[in-house]
Length: 156
Image (cartoon, rainbow, N blue to C red; front, side, top):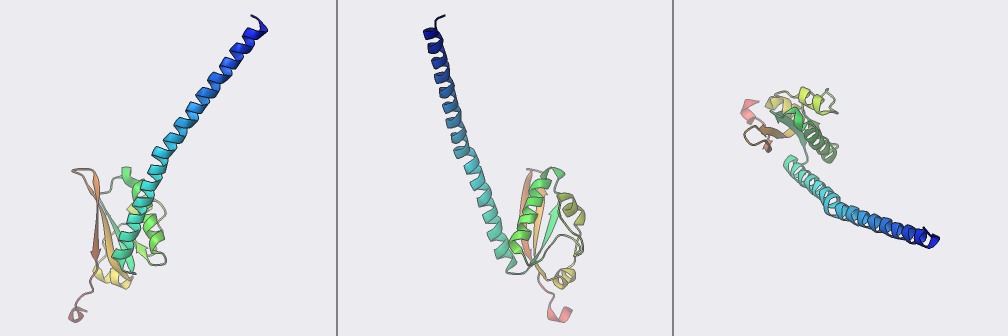
């Protein structure tokens, strides 16, 4: 093989490598634009919707979060929602259990759950309750929001 032939093969190899690298970069950029950017936008939109719903539901007051039949497979999703709600409502209270129980993980959130009565909620300045209920029939998490009404004046 002559030097001229070797140079031709090397040049052809480099051109092929540059073409492959260019295609890979184009695919990577396209993947980022189509998937990651859209996915991140979807996540931001989801959080924006949660933020609006939580702020409007609480009317400037505290909130109690209740979990019903949430399976461990949804731990990450539930703790993300919980932490987002805490972030959005700060410095207002977000409780999911007794006031002295710290919650940083989904397991702590699940363990903290209890059934407070209206008097306990009102004593702790909670006027709104959000319930995440797992619907076993379709695998969806249903979110319901309820207002805590104080007892009538004569009942106190």
